[in-house]
Image 1 (tube, rainbow, N blue to C red):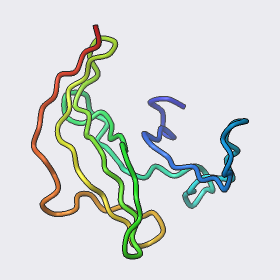
Image 2 (image 1 turned 90 degrees about the horizontal axis):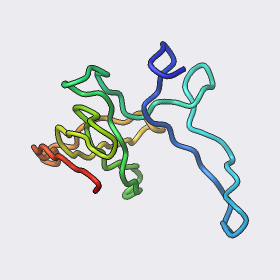
Image 3 (image 1 turned 45 degrees about the horizontal axis):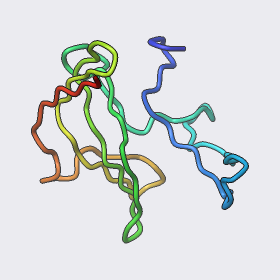
Length: 115
């Protein structure tokens, strides 16, 4: 339900499929207490403040999971958006991500457009 009470900005599926030549079969999602796909990184969902947070890369190291993310302030015309910052979130407890990893939040405002 977009923009409704069950709106989740980002979720994470997992797969044991090692041969993507015929497509990737998903084994499941990280789920919440309702067994629905869990939103990993929350956002205020307020336009011109923080409309969403988008994971851009993930990795595991030393028993923790990390997600690089970007905070989107405003969606503009097609192909344009404004961001607040890029950051790094960490989970050491089954995908309960804490934003931001200290010293990793980078102040930035980007206006990106495609011609």
